[in-house]
Image (cartoon, rainbow, N blue to C red):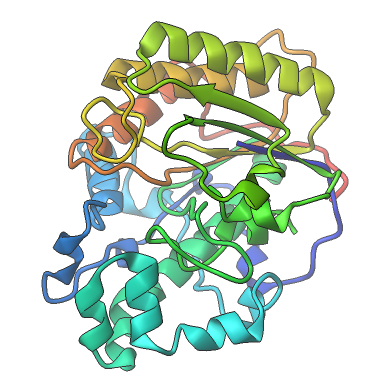
Length: 326
């Protein structure tokens, strides 16, 4: 979770104006990744974004015309964060294979890799930037994709090729981009035995919440509440970027925690309540991205969480405009 103070933002087509008739929810069917079945070689469900949206439509909460269609981040946009050397390295399929952790990608012509794999990630990156703008205008926003927290300005990894979180403001990736930046406060809740192995990046985390393996709901939720309350006492943000990963779910092969589906729904509700619930001293704009999670059932859990936020009145179509100096 990242909290940031206001800063000057460069003009970009990713910040185009959106009609008030749209929910501040960003999604495109082109987020989903599928190429020759190779995506199935990674535990990450590269079609989960479409499943989340389908579940929300089936519940009657959203229609196709309700959501904001993102604009793909261009090379010019990406150069606000990434070096030209890093972006050029993505023109080598072997490099992309390492980032996505799918070795056979190295054997594909790069034009296929660009079209079938990297373009969806660039589109999701544009979606996070757009959602950040919407959050400052309407109080909250959700990108059904994005949350590429393992990518920094100079390197990718963990299926994260572009630093969408860093780009939206100006995992062990974005932490590197905010070392010694007093305008940004990072709180991270993680299994201490698996993440982050990057000790340099870890130095940027202002509030580390280190969990034991297989931590369960009660302990997890208590620590999230306690530490987020303290973080908000220490830092007065203009926006919260909430990286709402589901790799904490029990049975996740990489997260090694034991949080139930209901625990994840409660966690998301807790974060939104502390950011913008009734009775809070101020309403803090919040941007939520869906990030990681390595089980097929995470899409339903994410959809259930969004439905719960709506039911609790924490997000709504007609959110009040937020006055911020950006």
